[in-house]
Amino acid sequence: MCGIVAYIGKQEAFPILTKGLQRLEYRGYDSAGIALRNGQGEFEMFKKKGKVADLLAHVNGKKLTANMGIGHTRWATHGPPNDVNAHPHFSGNNRLVMVHNGIIENYEALKVALEEAGHTFQSDTDTEVLVHLIEELQKRENLPLEEAVRIALSKVVGAYAIVIMDREDPDKLVGARKGSPLLVGIGDGEFFFASDGTPIVEHTRRVVYLDDEQIAVVTRDGNLQIKTIENEQLSPFVEQLDLQIESIEKDGYDYFMLKEIHEQPHTVADAMRGRINAKEGWIRLGGVEEYTNRLLQANRYIMVACGTSWHAAMLGEYLFEELARIPVEVEYASEFRYRNPILTEKDVVLGLSQSGETADTLAALQLAKERGALLYGIVNVVGSSIARLTNAGSYIHAGPEIGVASTKAFTGQVVLLTLMAMSIGYKKGTISKSYFHRLLSALEEIPAKMESLLSQCEEQVRYIAAEMKNATNALYLGRGYNFPIALEGALKLKEISYIHAEGYPAAEMKHGPIALIDKNMPVIVIATNKSAYEKIVSNIQEVKAREGRIIAVVTEGDKTISPLADYTIEIPETEEVLTPLLSVIPLQLLSYHIAVMRNCNVDQPRNLAKSVTVE
Ligand code: M6R
Image 1 (cartoon, rainbow, N blue to C red):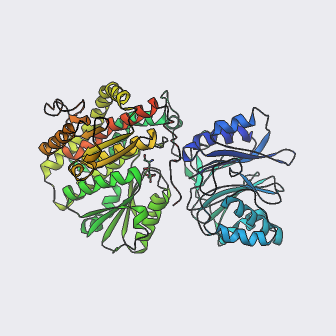
Image 2 (cartoon, rainbow, N blue to C red):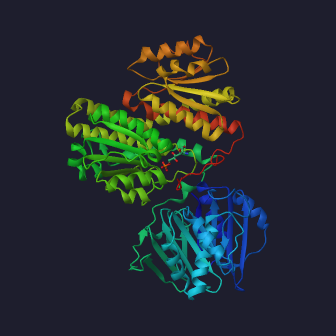
Image 3 (cartoon, helix red, strand yellow):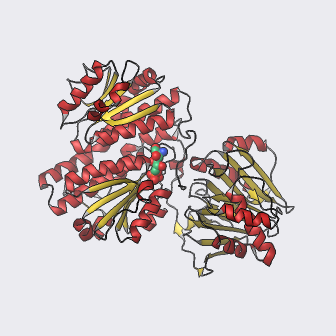
């Protein structure tokens, strides 16, 4: 949930760390801090509540010369977000300094034992307890840093990615991970540690992704050693970082979220590239081909996810049941993992996650693996924990998603679910050849339709946003494939504009929420349905009769709904099962423009972080 960057080499560490932290800020922005080891052998530490910009203001242009240092951007778990709880944290004797991402679950017991041994603590964090423990072991047994780290980590319950520096050892950094991501970047006479590739991509593309319970020791003389917590030496597996710098810049847009919304015609095309061919009539997904028998013979599919990925999973349920005739259960990963679920070897568990690091989704998948289910991942971040845990999977290839509100990852997930359901359905014979071919052609047209929708609807959406921006509540209604889109539209609005919003199946409205409707309540109805069209028209009538303000998303050319609605947004015609790929776009734009008009920080909404690597 936090971001880590560290450097050792010949360059000035300060600009590398602070620029790296700005790139990692999407992971948390409650506080930011750095510690440098300068040429005089002293640590210099700066940390501040707030964003990296606040840290830079605090440094106030002071010349900091050092070629070794660690940095951190925090999403608070233990202790409020303030200067004291900001990372890095010193050990008691100020010899060690450390940054940490994750949660040490047994920190209270460790703290009590350390207090009995004479340690006192400045902050409320679990991190400070861990660095004191490492100091205690180092001091007591006169151990080299990496050995003290190894023994300390064997006493820890919980999740961590850490990087630690020792004032007495100017030539070494030690990093380790369990449950939180950490990679080592190998430069020319220099090394980096980072939570992901974004802080280091302009310096090196040679990386080693650490696995759980691995410790990496890098030294100024170019040595990289990896060992496990059990002290087993490993050979580093060096990979090429696949990341374009342009994909992590705003590229002229005011916010990453807007850029990412507009990237969707390309990201959706990338999700399909090389995987479908409408002319020749095929779909090829590596993971599906590899496990065809198990996927076809499964009793049921269970989809586990959180947040927006959970909404994509709900669409997965509709798609798989309709196209492949396979029963699907959609589960909040956080509930599933603690419910002692009934799982058998005949089950397939799909994990959906943009980041591939969401703690609850990862734990739910781990549980399913222990019980013998086949795991399939639909993930964006290449090499992420979920990608590595699952037996098979498909990347969505959306490129880095930096805005906290997920947009292009969602449409990418929906594309992959559609391809999977179609491919399995076709193999099983549950969809006809002609329908399969029609869907393939319709899929290939989606990027162009997204492009034209984006260019046509934004001005109108901005106008509606201005009308809606002072609302305190909003209701999103949809039926069938548009019900998950109603949920997603409501989530987008609340998370970035702080307007309370609820998504509901349109027909359920009359069982309660209808009581909320009056002339002040904007009701966004996603009404592109072909099936149950008359039903959704009746639902709109019910809202109108109570004076609700209706914003309707309809298929182009719709003549029935516009006279009923206050505002109508048209989306291009497509096959009904594919409409979510288009109907979600005006809702993403609506929440974006409302948030901008309310002066909210769209990319970094309060209290949130991009990837939730804690429970
Ligand atoms: O990385 P994941 O897809 O696993 O993340 C799941 C949720 O945390 C995420 O979708 C969250 O709800 C977003 N802020 C929604 O925009």
